[in-house]
Image (cartoon, rainbow, N blue to C red):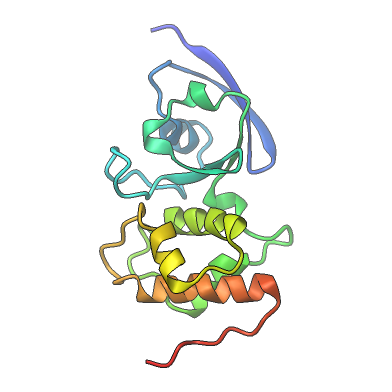
Length: 166
């Protein structure tokens, strides 16, 4: 099969490669760019483990062809850390609030939460739950994921995180 040249900016770095037109973006990212943070889960957009940010939108990279991302700006979980290498507010929130167990969903969950906080810097618990509804977690029950996102929102907004009384 003939290959197509693609070029995009991934985590701030211009990359390019040759792909078959049927190559999914998740496979280009993992196999050619060797960025393995985004996971392959269901390959049907149901689980969200493959979520990346493309041109300011959350996208499930398992159902997008690499050629469709040609010319785009893509951010993966590897691009989420602060420039000095420290954890982003979301990564720190997931760590501090125990927002992960097995960790399989975590990269996609953080990427979706990142876009959610860009769209709504101070979401309610209900808005967070709605905003991450397309990303599934089989381990946590979501309670600590919600807390992690609330923690990150408070940190980003320069306010103190107030954990709700249980």
